Image (tube, rainbow, N blue to C red; front, side, top):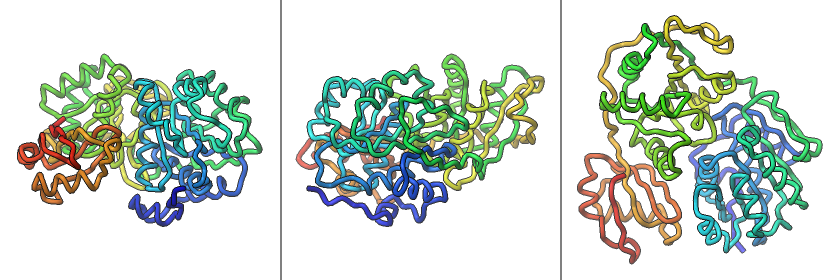
Length: 436
């Protein structure tokens, strides 16, 4: 039996959050005291915490079975929710399963069943067919960004999963899209709807950047000079365009990472890790990054290509001005290009001359040991402070994975750290430490 941390105030303190927002408070009450729930709220408003807090409070600490299943449309969102759940420090085992990684890894992690299982519909359905876990104590189902799961073709798997769960007590659906159709197979029971979509993105400023030429690369460079060294995402509609823009940024020596469906999962995950921990300030992405990824503290987004639909425009914009923070969305367009009606007229941003953004003060190092090796964040920090002789202010974000760890460190301390720690012992295990 475990002794889980259920107290909301303790969990919020562990996450460094002082209070919940209005949407989170209302959603929590609805989940605790109501039937099924449909939660509609903008991207970046904190829906993950809104359903996790009450869900964890309802779990049975004596159970050794899967009690809650969270279905998500993408690998990135599965990884993100798993990370948030672990950071809450509740004591409940959590695992994420998703396509693109060996099923053998899943089998190892599911030998001891988690209380909370997170996954993409295809991989979860596969595990149900394999009978990797029982469903007799699975009482809570969350369909996070459920409309996106339907949009990318998971309807058949979602239907199969829902129909196999005969002991469900509560279904929770979330979306950032208005007027979504809920399929009958979800079998909602007198659902409560919590709708905060009307609030929009409260601290978002949307502006226009006008290019005098149809080819907008030069204007993009001018925009980046104006914006300077702050975190942002440039959205393109196509992978081929991303390659072209990336080559241009390479010519300008502007550090950046790529994020699109054509990349290997490992490369996408590392791009997000570097972006999250401040090693890289610029992400060049398709709409895959418009929702379902954890990228806090984004100061701006740039629509290098105009989105095709209002929904895409909304989700892209939701990447910035998150959780009461301020942010700006820039629409970069040719002066003869007509803006869609859903964008409308925008104030023009006058670009100031400034130096191009350069390398960040931080970089990311890889450590060849993780959670599966009984290594904790505290172990990594202590190893860097003692063995690596790192000042405390030179070690930043630590992301612990099952078999490795990624750590943000001050770039000016990198050489010293690697010389003192690479091929040395951490908890009686020899580890590799190198920059990625």
